[in-house]
Image 1 (cartoon, helix red, strand yellow):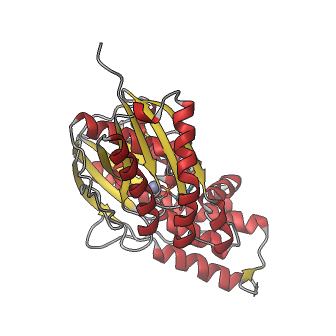
Image 2 (image 1 turned 90 degrees about the vertical axis):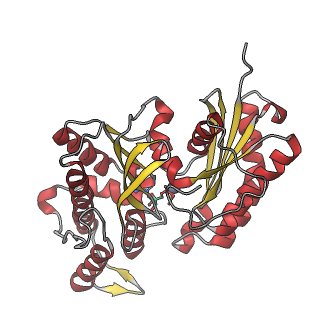
Length: 345
Ligand code: KG4
Ligand code: ZN
């Protein structure tokens, strides 16, 4: 009987401290702690994030090992996010993973966070068959990719300025919501009827119709607020219905821009499916629009369940397993790379 293979996944690239255990490629247990301490600062404070990872990581790993009913020396490898992300935060995870691998004499696997989002749809059994289109939407990235195979990625377009999650968080801040505000914007947009929405422009990037630009949309929301509402101490005096009308208009503009790019990218191509991942893909508003776009193209749209859209350890363990199977392990001098791009390891 072949021996069971256990892989631990560790994620500390931003403000989620997360760990997960996989047995023979199947997720056994995962645990994510979102660092709520950043909400009062209106964004992630890098130094505080690193310190919180230091406090939370060991107990998170202990918990996933306990819940998985295994001992630390049952592990066959440790997979860890080494980029992209915040330098100090990445360093906490990578140093911890190196320590474990060194002590247990097992392989270390460096994982690209964006690539982990890309394959996270497989966590619940969906198996996208290349070639397919992938749209990665997170707080730091908005990327449209053609996937020709594992590790074969052609970036068709990305954002020229703000990422979608960044846009949501900045607009949320203008409106006085807690960071991160994507989920709140989404909830409010769904409360409003589209007949009452505030209409915002859709940006097109001339050089590349598959690229994105969201900073104009952010400015348009700010203009609208400045022109229509009084501001005291940096806060706009604005009613709930008006807020929701603006957010409905914002969500509609964003979904039009994203879905138009999907339609253009798929024109004349034979993609098997569209895969969407990253924290913003937890948006119910956008999920519905992506599914409708898939119906127009007659191809399935794969989006992970909510908990695997935002940062989590399961997606790191999952990609770690794929790399381990292919013997793509890292050297013990693995470096963090805050600017790591999709396609790089
Ligand atoms: O992938 P992620 O967890 O972290 C990064 O890698 O950046 O994405 C975080 C982003 C934040 O900007 C957050 O506001 C957004 O995802 N987000 C959402 C939702 N949940 C999180 N945006 C829209 N709807 C949601 N339900
Ligand atoms: Zn992420």
